[in-house]
Image (tube, rainbow, N blue to C red; front, side, top):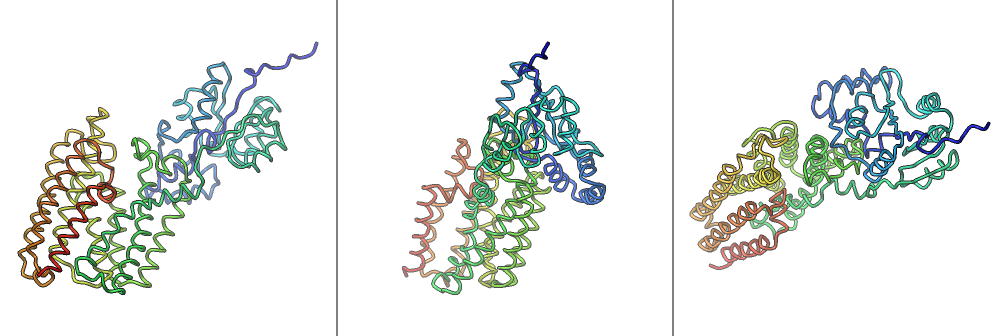
Length: 485
């Protein structure tokens, strides 16, 4: 009597994890977590790697914990797996990631009857994974979902090969060794597009602060000074993009819990974390090469201070209430100091004083918006990754509006400085700037209270039509003060 053919539900569906079920790699994720949270302990990775890749995975799995719930899953595939599970299909997770990292994923999803993974001695990948699956289920006794060339060996022993990839060449190679079933696209943007977003070019708008000393010193008519400011802008932009990538790598766990930041390229799994670790230092080297070659040493020193403070902020100081705001204000002010250093001009007491207070107000706006979002979402406890509670909302608002109004007071006192008469033909016209700034600061806080503020108030100010209109009016006021005797 012939043996009956197995029903589809009797054939186990085996799913790869890294790059297939999730858009990232748990080995890279765990290494990133160790480097950013315990940098000294991360040196142990060299010793683990000496004993092989399996030992490295075991060491990392023992050293870190990852939040399975916040990982970037391949949602179309996950939805299909849930349908298969609801229909009674046996589903197995088979991954080269370590068992201790794979099991939390399986528990979170609740779809798998078994988890097959690497341990301290076996790296369950390619031929090793194939051999284990054949030993358990027999040749052609399972269906397999994979995503790259390492899965070809497994597909060759599978009844049906399911593929998660945008590469037509990989699908063609899979068809050469097995019958191909479903092909899912990666649901990811082109690599260059995701990398461009990771650089956050829109944040370069903040670096226009570098041009403030040029304008304040009335040096905009000198081509050489204008060129120096433009070179400083590019160098600072490269350094800032390096910082943004580094910050995204450090904050990836917190970003994945944020309603907007979770869409950032690294948090969403659109760009490999390895690419970030390669790109960030390259951008920093490019920035310092440009600075050291074409700009004043004082600018290079300012750039180094900016990178150092930003690193300290990302690693620890952003979690210290109030100090984080002071540091944010200082980082904004450093852009003006950098612009001054690029032109080799003396620092202006009044410009620095005004900058510290106005940027302190805007930094408080940033924190206020985060706290308002937390309260709106019903989160009354500590804000994740910050030193604040949602109950701090009102006091943060008071601090922020007060420092903003002090900035206007600094501007009023500047008008009375005898040195101001040397720069402006009629300093009295600058009084008109005071009500304009009072209106702008008050409106900014009003918008923040209404929950309509961008995560970054500087970006908001540079993209808001009313802010632009007020900026034009302020330019007109200072033009009158300069030109009208």
